[in-house]
Length: 160
Image 1: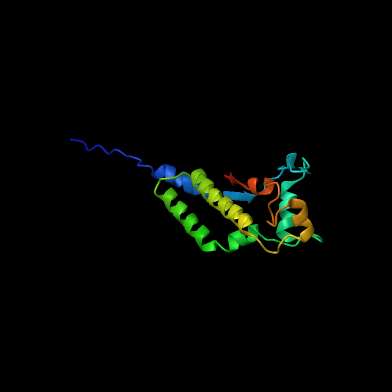
Image 2: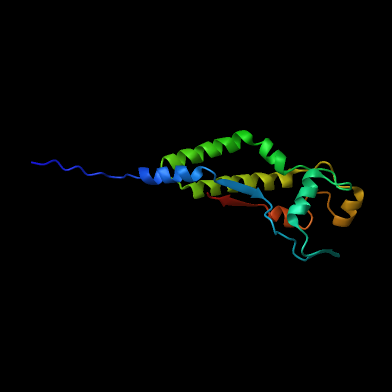
């Protein structure tokens, strides 16, 4: 009598593929190139179409001669390093367990980071808007006027 050996792949090959895919893959979070404002009207004011949202975000993050720095991207990461690292480790474990693909995990990390940036934009109150800006906007809320910047935070999973 001859013994028959049957090799069963219980998902190990796919897990190896997903782990290999992690090498060099990443998530881009923020304001994607080419994102521009849309024409909008708010009361008597108009939002011009075609302004670069990444440029507007950078001016607010770092400040200009007339706009004080209100860092929302860097601080959203710095203040949540432990949470982000825990999420990354959790997603890595799910990939190892065969529960998620690399693309799915990167997408979930991207969603988390997008949420953190939006929360930070909404939470910032300092430095306050100038009295002139408050009079023009009819609001003292920094970083949010027409709402297009906060609505433009996106992520993109880049797979290698």
